[in-house]
Length: 445
Image (cartoon, rainbow, N blue to C red; front, side):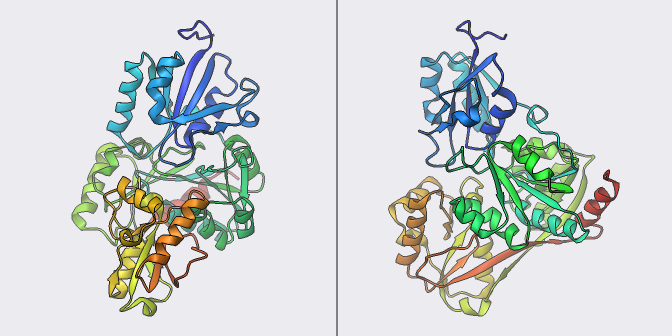
């Protein structure tokens, strides 16, 4: 047994954001009698702290479950709970952010650890393609949908496993399977979850997600010929990939080497996809390609495009519109605007209405927390109160119409909604399709 400062089990705090932290616990600590996870901490996602990781998921060593505390409580936890080790387990943060937390841990007398992906990746019985990225908002979802459609066209049963977003009842969300909008309703999915799941379901694709990825993997591979991991943020895949595709974003040159763990994901990639190359400057494309070649010279490198379309461009021409965008892409993804904003301008709107003028208090707090945001409204909807605040902000605005760049359907609004949709396209030949086809041809079975 590895002993901590107390002479008992080594005492651990896992820093997280309701995703990788739970996966790290499940794969590395749940049944390990040498370690005791004293607490998780929460960041990025509202209303996670103050809850508990339930006993039904925590296992026999944790009959009372595990408390989830605010990350700001870390110094107190170190001091009051005799913590031996702090494990960092979330994504899409600067390298400096990680080391600031490391400094807090070290000053409090604890070790600081990052668990490598090999220690936490699960081995599948079916071939695995993973789609990851160096930042949130690179376009993973549209690429994953495009690959899934290509695989289904070959007659393959595809299981899409999505990076976790368990923001509700964790025990109930242990293993989730979404094949219809009714499944989303039954699970009381947030707007953030619907943004990821609804487009897959509309295409006839089943999506698996939840908390316990060993159980999720068992469920998915039982009814699939091939597994497709759709990453969240810029995280490592939870499954051991046979083909790892990492997206870089020429709209944010330099980010590929500045954020954790995105730089590691880029260095691991078999294929690097230069996303949105149709919307970026050639100098910026050249910059991310040069960075990729320095960090991962052996990767196959291809360019891709992201095509944005409005359902009814004529309906917005000459109108005052309020633009709603994918929330995480704007907030911790760091983008000032998104696809909806670009589509509205291209359609010739008279004005993009600033949502700050009508923001409810909860939405005003989001703008205060993320001052880089442009004249767009992040689709914040982690709970019913946020969804109501979003609807109130839209209703109070001077806009005649809403242009929605979020993949989730916005419901219950008092203004007409025109959807902006974006889809992956090949930008060169041979492109990503040739890579995927070659992988399938060589895959066993």
